[in-house]
Image 1 (cartoon, one colour):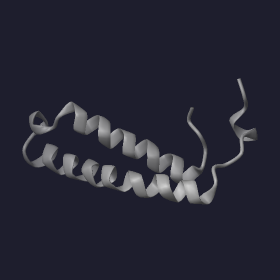
Image 2 (cartoon, one colour; image 1 turned 180 degrees about the horizontal axis):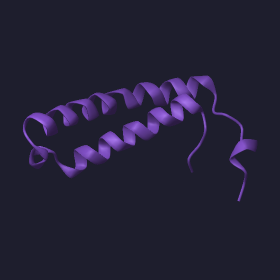
Image 3 (cartoon, helix red, strand yellow; image 1 turned 180 degrees about the vertical axis):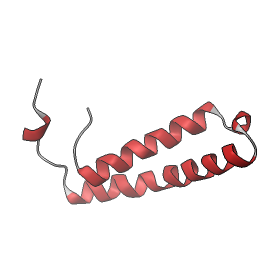
Image 4 (cartoon, helix red, strand yellow; image 1 turned 90 degrees about the vertical axis):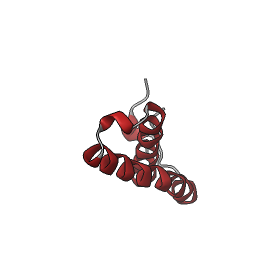
Length: 69
């Protein structure tokens, strides 16, 4: 296995693109949290949760510049 500390960071342009693509997912995560509090968890779909998690991972990659896989 390669050491993550020795890996190069992603280029800034690619990090910006990933970050911009992840912003709608962050907005969805906020909307899902609000819906879960006001209306209950039963109104939140599994695909919506997975999409929000994928956006969170994209924003993590954009902020840190590290690859997860």
